[in-house]
Amino acid sequence: MTCYETLFVVKPTLTEEEIAAQITKVKDVLAKEGAELVGTHDMGMRKLAYTVDKHARGYYTVLFYKAAGSTIEELERNIKNNEDIIKFLTVKYSKNKEIAQFDKLVANANKKVAPEAKAAEVSEVPDVTEAPEA
Image (cartoon, rainbow, N blue to C red):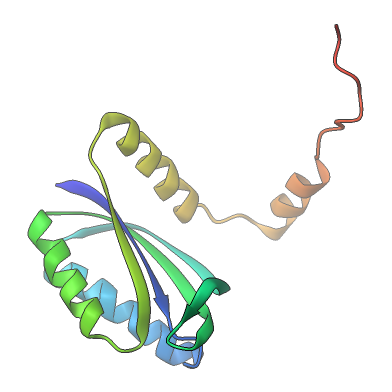
């Protein structure tokens, strides 16, 4: 099975429950087609680079999965027929370096960072005011 990443943007006018239902629909298509979902990253509401269907914002979600090529055709067909999804992009990872990057992305998506740990990461910014040694 090949590694894939699909990013899709849901309309911002939907409620939280409707957005969750749209994400579930996409996951159900993957499950029905026999894909192995290995990670999900909900990026939340973000500003689009340009307006799409008169929307300046959208709810971004990235799914990481392993599937056969025919699964992608069925997934994209379902997404294209869904009026609540305004944009999508599917990326295939096939080379060894790409698969290593895929594994890192999946690990980051699955990692749950505690608020205290996140605050500690922010406070540990290195001091860059020192001059480099010659």
